[in-house]
Length: 182
Image (cartoon, rainbow, N blue to C red; front, side, top):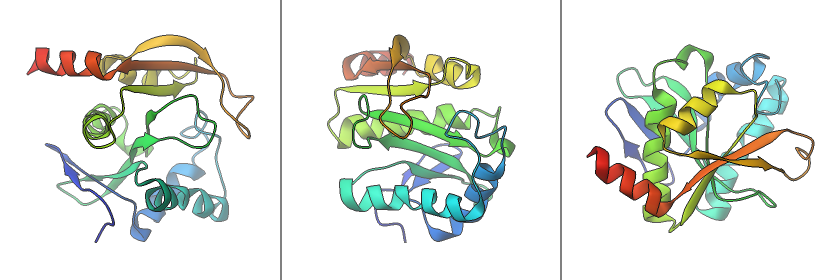
């Protein structure tokens, strides 16, 4: 059983990571193209250490990215959710998905549920997304979420050299937009 919340959407289950999720996570991190905007590809051993960051954040902070699971098949699709490492430029809801899940709206669906949860359960008043200026697919996800580009940002080490734009919105903007589409 997951040690934390479980969120269900029309097509997805969002829950804290489990050891069984690692195989697909390792596939994602082995794919150089898929990882070019999230720190680069990694060996299986390095992927395992990186994988353990999210369960660790759940234990220490009480939140982290959720594993995103296909409700129909049980397949791990990716991860999305709240993320705030030391020195981060704000309260982020991020996403990364296995290439087999790209182009199906999963990132938007999962991030929507994660943002709802972060505002309701964590009491956040603002959410950001740190996106490489060349990562057009993630920019489109941010736009579908209602976030706007707020300009260049800076990440802490070991990512201080990464180029990012900070996309984001306030809780009030999020709630107004959600009410308008309801």
